[in-house]
Image (cartoon, rainbow, N blue to C red; front, side, top):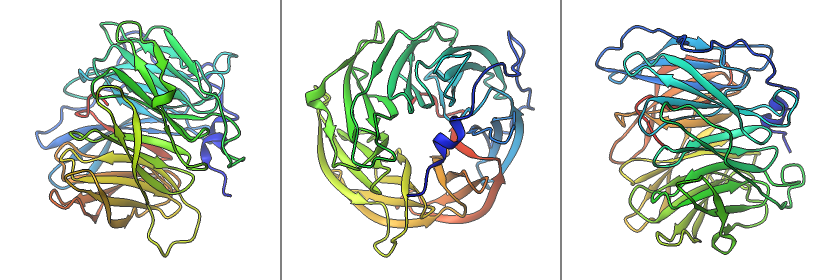
Length: 395
């Protein structure tokens, strides 16, 4: 099996002393955008001694053209990003295995200038686990939620009125393993997201083949595992990322190790999960190695997208009125190893981060069918992983 890049990047990386701008000094002061522009951030891996890891871009939403505004040093491997529901703070992980001698990565907070997108450093806190690979906030923006891949832990960090973080108020250790010994030797928390009601938190763990359900305390950030409500997936699935449907009681999960997407019914009252449907993310003719990564549902609720690393494509599924999935298209991403992707605020474009070939590619998106069409719009960036538009506040 081809070894994946996460452990290659983080095993020898420590956070240590990094060149950061502190206090109230802005990290970037780009010019004011035009009305047709949208600002977005791209998190990357900072391998080979590179210091700039977080990129601020501007997109012309009429043409799809991308332009780099700033490249920022925000510490090692700022691979995953999220934006507070109020749109005023950006949070980034530092996906490393050690920070100041402790076996943990970090989460950093940056104030966002509403007009320019410029970032001002607020603070940083330990992620309470090695190699944090996913960060989100609860629906009310009171806590950051972080999944630590190498340690198999999930943590909640309080957010104060300025957007800054406090030390983790709660940490949960996942336990278990799966049959794929090279990847499932123990728990590997890979994603953590709040339920739309904010009463529950769901965590996908690649190592234990489960989507875990937690009762969420909005006041303290405490997570209570409701084990009987978990989704237990077939051995060797490797659940990676989750995406809720905007109106139906469904959550979709990408299976990294068996190239599947699974639809789960999520009981609105209890959070209990039940498998509804599982499909391949690949065309039937493909026989090579493949590892699905990101997953998103269009705002209309009619289309689901999953990225395929190896086949180097985005699988496009239609979603029927009752939630049934049908594979409609498998679109080449025009690059190697597509990680995260996103739909721009206008809904006209889908942007894909091709990690190994170092590019963000832009695809035109049909609003009705959800199908994708290649364009000539792209920008070269080193090891891009995560894309977040400024307008995409919240999870």
